[in-house]
Structure formats: C-alpha cells, structure tokens
Length: 268
Image 1 (tube, helix red, strand yellow):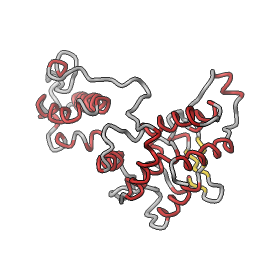
Image 2: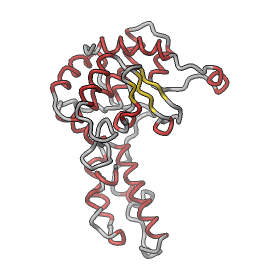
Image 3: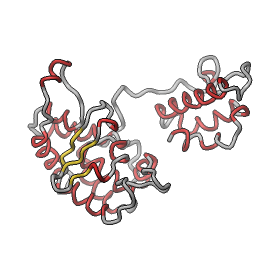
Image 4: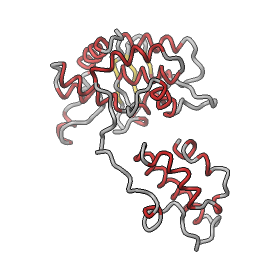
C-alpha cells in the first residue's frame, strides 16, 4: 500500500532512472506528518532498487538514491519517532460526539472506521475482514491467526450496535470482503480511514489510536480486570508459562465489556 499510494510518482519511472530528487518528491510530503510511514516507505524504495540491482537491471556501481546513511540523512531532518505502540489518539471523552458525526458521514470508509471504534480492533483486521469470519447468530467475529499480529486466532464479541452495522453493510454485499475496495478482489485501503478522519476534521488522530482511547476508558471508567481489557485488544499478558495455562479467552466477560463500550459511545 505504501508503494502504491505514497510512491505513486515513482511508478512510471524506470527503476534504473530513479534519482535522489525523485525519491525526495515521494518522501517530503509525509516526512514530518507521518514519520513512521515515511521511514518505512524510504526503506521499501531502497529495497526495491537493491533488488533490481541484484537482478541485473541496474549498474552495480550505481548508488542507491533511497539510502539513508551518508545520503538522504544529509537532505532530510532526522525522522521523528513515536514511542512503540503509541499512536495519536482521541480522548475517550470525545468519542461519543465523534461517533455521532461519523454515523452521519457517507462512504464505506466511515463504516469501517465505525467498526474499528466499536470493536477496538486494529484497522488492518477490520479492513481485511471477510464475511465467513462473522457469525451473526453467535454475535462473534473470528479473526484467523494468519491475520493477527500475534499469529493467534482472536474472537471478538460483537455488541448489538456492531451487529446492526454489519447487517446493514451485508445488504449490499459485494464479494467476500466486508469492506470491498474499488478493485475487484481487493479490500478497502487504510487511506479510506485517513480520508474519513480528514473529512471530519479529526486532526492528528489515527485510526489505531481508537484502541488507546478504548483502553483508557476501560481503565478509568470501568471496574473490569486489566486482563479482560488487554484480552479485548488481543494483547498477550504474562510470561510464556502463564500464557500456556490461560487457555480461555474470557469471551463472555469481554462481551459485557464491549456492550458497555458501545453504550458509552452512544451506539447501543
């Protein structure tokens, strides 16, 4: 996605002809506003060019125009870094008003962001969701291990609000993806969530940050055990021995938590 969207200006250029200025034109628009994305993008551009060199498409003696050390570091400020796991988040107190505005917004991106908020799931898990993962009768969305950051299956209890949202989307089902993109067989991209936030003037807020808001709410406003809130976020807690003995996923306790979250958000 980063190469397709943020490096779009490079795609028409023969890889052997990509210059330092070409790379800078791709990086500079997001270098300060999206430092982590920009840093990943630079690394991926560098990898593509290195791969082309190994494949014989570029002269071995030609320097990589996307390399950082001794090259782009002289032209770009050192990228700002967010602490690991921290994303710009909306204060949880503001979410009910924001969700009310979000529900008035049109488009599949708005609906995907609504599900991100109601389930506290990662945006990638929501955007990659397919209909066979959703059990309407049991009110459970099962994300397979292959799509989870920790490579473990995650069952998400769906509040009544989340079920109503998914049922409304299902009436216009196109293919397997819950949130289909414009290209056949592709899901909606993360750009759709960014654009939705931009349209709603949620400056500086990221889709991932809603997970932080949920966690803050659970810790500040409820009496649910820390383990339940962390399980809702699919976070592993404790050492390996403790994880081995904790085989259950506290689904019903998490269901009560997610129902309360939906009620707090004004979505129940």
